[in-house]
Length: 387
Image (cartoon, rainbow, N blue to C red; front, side, top):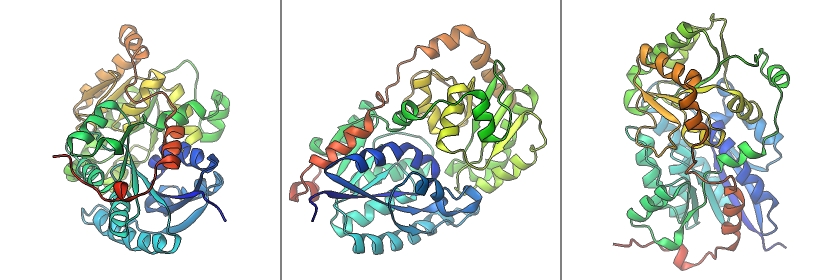
């Protein structure tokens, strides 16, 4: 017989799992908590690295696997996949009956988890509510999850204030910082030789290195191919060593992959379907510049003093530390911004000294402690609005 609270985490994609992995570890190690995971979405797809294997290697207990990914460019596929997730998650929650449901962010698994928790009267703890990203359906999903969730772990004070403006009660809201920073501090350092061996390519010391991660924005699916091609034409023109990680599983991603395959021949371009956490963090540590539109450039790159060139509208409107330059999907603008990020010493010095508004790398233990000590009662479960 145990008095530990059971936390059921829901994870659907490698990038989100990497952010949450330190939280899962803190929960597993806590003497008042137990952890199980539901693994769904892109984790179970071979095209995206079958990253459920990484979760197993990390030693976390998997309560269920829920295959849900409809891999294609139709805008209906994500919402159909979410319907599958809800059905599978309901069955798992009914069987496991956890004390807490825990989820990050703004994708299908977050809204599915929040709906299941709300209807089944199980408290939902949501990480990264209150963030703001203009022009993507994820922004609307994130705010909807906030209205359904019972506990809010925000990544910045700016986001915490936005959650309160949404009418959430203050006792539910905790500014814990971004747990993605925790992994950067905790992941072991690899030498250039070790990293090269892991990747199967040569990372050359002393030469510019670009880390390229570009995803689709939901309101611009039809432009995904040409947007990816414009970035890759800039990469081809510059000739700097570039490590590219595939886009995520959203609609439009296959268009981007078609563009990527047209540039596979470039000698300066290394393409990875998925970058495991160890390689991902060590590439960030060694990169001269991050290019594309990944949230890692906004949330985590400031901790490393890493300059970021964000292409297009994804991440527009999001709080950043001043390490990011926003440019349109135009080759000349991308080339100019990357050259500035790599060679402008005054700019690099300013970026190196930037202050990250997303915390101090200790979010995971805060989250675990709050889950352990928060009483699950009517006050928590019965939500009210403050206006």
